[in-house]
Length: 323
Image (tube, rainbow, N blue to C red):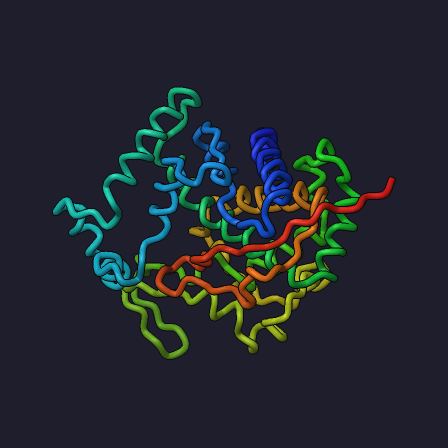
């Protein structure tokens, strides 16, 4: 993780530079499509802000934008063994061109890094949409909650006033940053649902029988907004996740990365990417709403991913710093 920080900081350099250029010519900026994952795992210098037609960006979006109205996807979710049948029959749930593109990208990355292709692709899928959506929605929450944004800025100024200060160790010490990111992921989890398969034996749980081989859908967004689990769940409260308050949180009520032995493999990386990007942006700018900001944001209801189809448009305002 520590060895990846120079790559992540390079991506943050692009992001800050782009925001600074765009704010001079437009009234709002699209807070979407951050490029940390491409550089970190594939060794590619991708700038989706300046080049939204980049092949990597196009294929990445298609890889994570499948719809609930895709009958093959529905069958794979509801009838787990259908995935194996599709595979035997040579039927692709995802566009074959997308898989071919990333297999080629992974092969080229292997020549440079000598890594395993399957692991690299899993890390990509685990981090790409999670990171993009989380940064997008966290920026929205900062713009619509000025008090919380100001508290985070104060912590940034205390721990990392310059970009040279942003290190793995230092970011890990920022409690308000950690609480704010976790609260943003609670309110807007990038994946609205996940699933698990009982591959062991029949289980009796609270009067219900879960047969072996049965697939269970876990409604993450609904759990995160359940008033019986979270006090005033529609309120943005980073303090919920401070150390002294974590004992009040049910151990499996926060599920943006799943939980247990099959939780998201990209959890630590995604959190680090999000935190680095927020610190670097808030060193220079504040987020504010504008006439083009959708309040509340429109969320994707046709996909298991919650990514807003229209993105989030905000104003990026340079900070007035004092020595």
